[in-house]
Image (tube, rainbow, N blue to C red):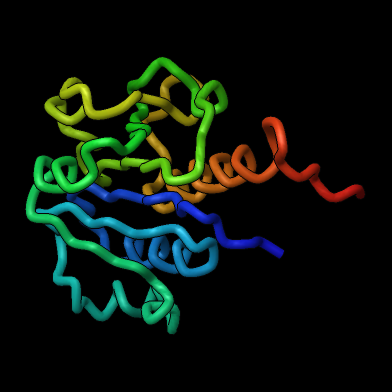
Length: 167
């Protein structure tokens, strides 16, 4: 059983375009206790039927904040440790050392994170390793991989953390 973190992870989607991807991430937040932050512009209405359907009946368990711009989000969390996920980053997420309260930031399905976000000094760029000549993973898949790696590290690595269950 997963126990809630004292300081939850924040999953930040910047300009997501596909409602079912965002709905899947909302469902992930509900089952892991992560917070969901959406940064506009969105490629859909927050009331979109496909968005609600993908999140199933978990929406009442999701902490959701909506921001008009990335700058507004960053200003609201000036001291956050941010991990900027990009297929073009050189550092693997497995080299990152995640901590409680970290913000995992993902770009749109179409264009990823904008250059001003990647180069703006608001976080550390990481990538999910893939075979060469592959463009990218699905957004909700990437968020799931990043989230569970961060949770694994927070829960099972470092001094004073619990050991994984014996098999």
